[in-house]
Image 1 (cartoon, rainbow, N blue to C red):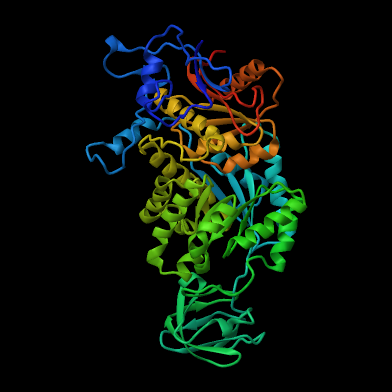
Image 2 (cartoon, helix red, strand yellow):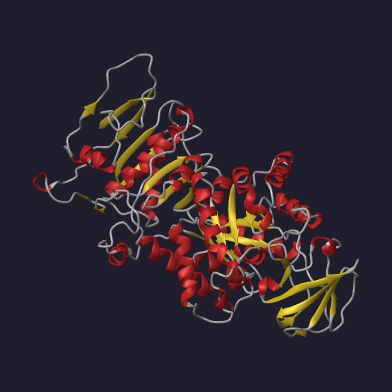
Length: 576
């Protein structure tokens, strides 16, 4: 066994340090130098605590010490850092084609909204087998009884598999401003006068009610009102104490309970309404995995919800939905306070100029990546597939852009909730994500500058990813809290992260994270026995083949079989 010991008191970020593996090239040379075991040790200091990289001996051929290095898993990866656009001679199209195989695994996760089209046991099973990773409960529709049925069915599915999981996300309705009920739709024509009133129960051919008492106060003359996400628009001409008088700019068919936005403004409503608190309690009672909180404007609401969950002893993560104009100036406090974010582009594009939405999407994704938070891109991703069996080419590009920008997950809403082709929509999202992942360059950015104590886990996640990318191996990690699996996900290794955990809640939560395949398994006190069972399970389920190599990581917030100051990275050959 070749062992490289590194003192935990040494500076691990200086490439001039002989014992540090600063790049994939150095790591490749170290592994390929000789097949026989070698020990490289710095001068011993009894006052130093040591972290160790433990590398199982493995033979990596190097033909006459020249040419390309190869492992039994395939060609060694190129982990050189470069931009997608640095070298136009690199053929990413052909590269991606070569990487996609029948056994390739998609890393970007898929969130599916459950509704009338998919609420049966048969459809939930089919969605899960087709590619659904997270089931979303939209609390704007349905009641607790229908959502309870969905939760029970998803939990039934999860109970039958140790290496498959569907997480449950409860999406709150939030403080929506809507028009009132209409006996029949009203056709709005360009140039006509149309009014909104805060009086309840008004429904005439030129005036309808709204459900928000401060509507007249919030809007100003000259404001643009968007109806149903921008399907119709009106300009405010005047107002009285209870009525806003408008002129139709873009007409259309106004139906009951249509969503209203004011371009560039957010309603002065609380982010969590009384109904939302009832739904949140319902989620606590049913131990859902995530809340997606609508119309978050500042970090205060996140802290309020987390305090409530702490008082309930509820282990539920909070995903903030970025969909209001007021949230954008506060992203620097909202995202750190949360456990992740969703780019909810529908209302975001209604309250802000639509041309800003792609830029905001990229910015939010990058912020989440820097803070190691999962990020979901949502709304209209395959909207045409609600009624059509094939997507538009623009929709395919939309998914591809989200994948290439680094989103952890992409989301389907009406496509799976009430669409005609829910399974086809999931298949399209799966194939587009997989194909685009395959053509991305393999890069590994070094850890950010943090205090030494806080960065040990990051350093080992970085080096495990570098090793995995260099010798083309999947990663196996054992975790009780999920922390090391999440760190590994942040570094985006090219291969799958098999995250073994003995906690059901952690298994379900990790289902959202990019590239992580969570597996439930009881840990024994014998590390080697646990490793052997894990490898056997992966072999038996077809996740690995005999003769492959894997990168095994022991590190993280809670030590399992190691002393707290010791971390290990091992490369092992899979044998039956």
